[in-house]
Image (cartoon, one colour):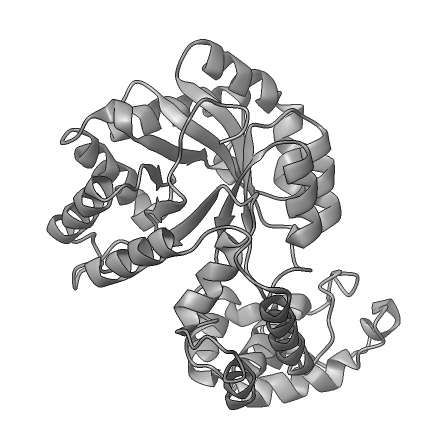
Length: 371
């Protein structure tokens, strides 16, 4: 890990997708078995966060820490930025996290899911001063952030402070999305550690695979599973410090450890990389609405969440998975903000730089999702 003396496993254990019981609680015996197996097989980076599993994840990681040599693992957790209303809240949440984790210090402390709004609010509350104080008094060792916004916002944040590390979405499809490859490169230039999250795009790069995409992969001289193809692309990047994987079963953990042992940086040939590029382009060609998510169409007079609505629809078509994305549509887009609430007023038309016929697309999307 650059800027530190830490030796860190190339596979990190993401503690957001622990196995759960029928009641929705973490299955603690299974989770402990997985954490212990990972520890015994070389994984030393464990990433959790305040909201994971409704606050239960940090508690389980804390119980795990009592069973091992704490000095041999690196624990990452995150300040819940959206909950910070006063400067005093920062200390309150950090101290609560230390208590839940049953540890005196957190190795890698992140500002969670930074975007332009939370970054602006936290700066006003002197968040960097808080982080430096927490590092000076020994409660945290290294300072970083995770990110979910556009590249210009990422660049502004990166250039504003001498961060130790960052956590960004990194996979072979999203090279021009969120921080993207450009963000990865400027972080590497600044010698930041780079934690790669969503290497499988939340599982969307592994199941199901549209027939046209599978036909391209079949041209490879090395036949691999979708999981192997996805993680190998990330591990091929020499500046990708850790690939973070959220695993729900012991079998998934064992599979990822096997691949971490097998793959190294700079292994892919120019022909391999060209095939990844062809696959990426094929996925992009499948996007039905070329929305850049600039959000210029907002606010909608009817409060329709236009970019979010089109984003879920685009992914449903791109990944050929209507069933999964219909569920995401209901989970992530409030009923009052869905496509069916559009009244065809046309206010958005003049605002859209892509000249998308938004009202007609809302009709199509509402029909697609059965509104």
